[in-house]
Image (tube, rainbow, N blue to C red; front, side, top):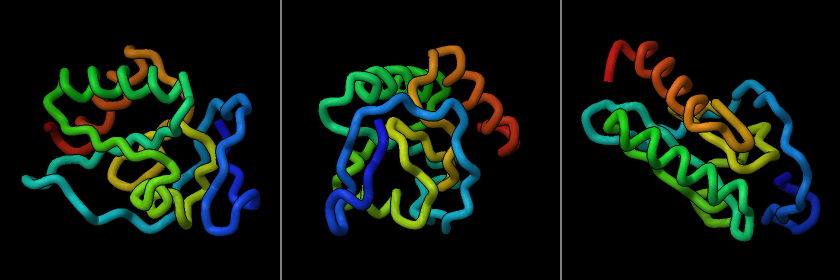
Length: 127
């Protein structure tokens, strides 16, 4: 799904289109609200009435649960979702942010989700 910022003043509209396979680099400011204990922050942005978003939520909830990491899920049109989207090059949902950086867009397989999480856990020096 693609977010169309021009459709509604101040509130992106959701239109259906095939997502880009590669996320754009994140140059937006980081969201500094952290999970207690200096844990990695994992956020999934989804949209209502979006079957790939529903499936992505299931995949990421299972992957995060398997490694003992919390997952925050926000609707793209909610105040938190709009705040997370603002200032980023994010145009597609579902979208995964890790520590405020766009890490994945579209629907990942469970294997891809585990690989992404393990790469970030390794980068952080463990869980």
